Amino acid sequence: MADPRIRQIKIKTGVVKRPRISTSARDRSQTMLREYFAGIYLTIQRLVKEKVMYVKETRQQEEKIERLKAEACDEEADSEARYVIKKQLEVLQESKMMVPDCHRRLTIAHADLSQILETEEDLAEAEEYKEARTVLDSVKLEG
Image 1 (spheres, helix red, strand yellow):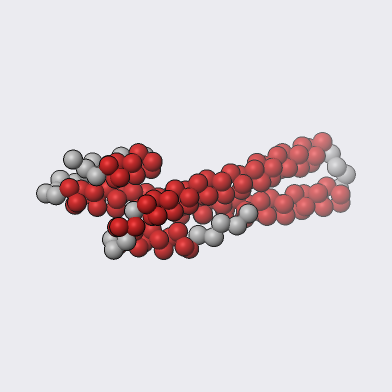
Image 2 (cartoon, rainbow, N blue to C red):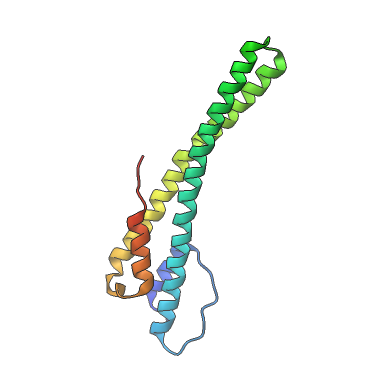
């Protein structure tokens, strides 16, 4: 039977992969742990990229709105120009709302990985453990 700690890891991450057939329980638990670390690593990596992209999109949207407002001031502000500015402001608000959401999800994934690494210190010699520790240390959780 598989190590119950690995089963808990699998449940938390939602990694559902067919385990490779191996001869020992230790091999199976290492395989499942490897899959978990790969899953959480990819999740953290994706969330960091998402947060960076939303911040970038917010800046670009603010610049676009300023440009549209400047053009509208140069010309007479017709209803179509006001409508476009209004819709761009809505897009900006949506982008601004996504930054804290990405940060929240990143914080949760970071905490999950940190907790697993603390409870599974006996696996510290495994390459996956070391890689997960590196990922955890590389992510800066700033507000």
